[in-house]
Image (cartoon, rainbow, N blue to C red; front, side):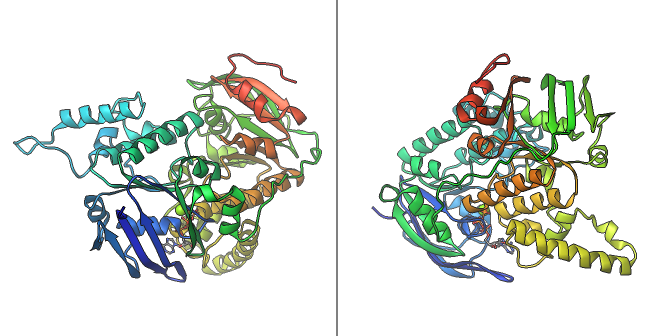
Length: 504
Ligand SMILES: Nc1ncnc2c1ncn2[C@@H]1O[C@H](COP(=O)(O)OP(=O)(O)OP(=O)(O)O)[C@@H](O)[C@H]1O
Ligand SMILES: [Mg+2]
């Protein structure tokens, strides 16, 4: 069998970084090919070269036996390559259908856009993916998970031979992951080559035929997945093995209540939520999509309004109606979707961590200079603590690898000096070694006296780091587990329960 696509000796030089160094890759019809490596290893860069978003500095692409050059994404698309990027490319203000057909809208003979066909075709694609929303819905109202599926629908609407997915499951729940896997199995059967990037090794072992490992921009090896163990892959990725680790959960360092929530209701999302968050503890928050988990976090940070109920901090009733107020009360939140809510893509890494808007930088230069010096000191510390891979503080955040953007956002939490930290999906898109470091960091924050709430769809992660775990289902608290009760079975049991259950 001939490969559909061959990438030969691809290099990509960015200012200060050789992101790809003579990388080879072959994709065969009907294979699922995993691409793995640490944050910053070059996975997304390789994908962007294949997708026409980056010109390689050197190297050749061969499609169906013929050399091809892509100057832009459109050329790669018309050669039959469909790419779903790590950071979605949908336009929030347009509808689902408009996004799917953007730039290639079918037209009537009169030249007018054929909306009927667009909407009907979109509706059938959405149905195929098991989505029940209307194609006329604007993308901005969709959850992260649904936006992802719209990206898949967009790919399916085109004629393509190669499908590339950059961390497609990072934002999906387990049912949605299963749905995606069956779509991938279907593509594979149709002879399409799938290139699949993920930090979740268990997924790769489930769906991939072969795996290519990148490290520091170089290809370590390409192997049949059946010949490898997870530990082999980790060793290829990070150069050492990572035996199952446990983070140390000491007894909470204090027993003072930081945040007390009583009978809180959030319109259309949650009702009657009651719990206490203590200084010195990590309180996990678990729940399936639709459980009200994200909404609870957002309400506590003043992003969503709550209607009824009480919030107090240090025993004092407070009214949190905006993020600014939340920050003033010493609450900090790491948002769930870094692209939409978290990052200022046009600013540097340093400014993103310090959350400085440009106009604030216009102030007295001398002061600025001093501040910069302190900031840089802090930044260097953070860089070490979080192992952020950036070649300078001035590098634009948008040019960091996805996992490194996430780490930079976490840096904000660290320098905010807030005592109450609300962390949403803190390790989304982060590689396996860094994940361990972030878990240890979260525990350390609690040890130092912070009150930390971690909302995550990764149940093993919650088990690993939480002292206690709040579980929501259908907008209500169905469990508050502590100590040895915090295990996967109990969390899942509460997550599907209709009423509060006592577990032991
Ligand atoms: N536009 C750019 N300008 C400068 N440097 C860049 C640019 N895009 C990527 N880089 C750098 O190239 C390297 C590889 O990044 P890439 O995004 O390919 O990593 P990745 O393997 O996808 O990581 P992750 O798992 O975190 O998504 C990183 O050091 C990154 O900072
Ligand atoms: Mg990436």
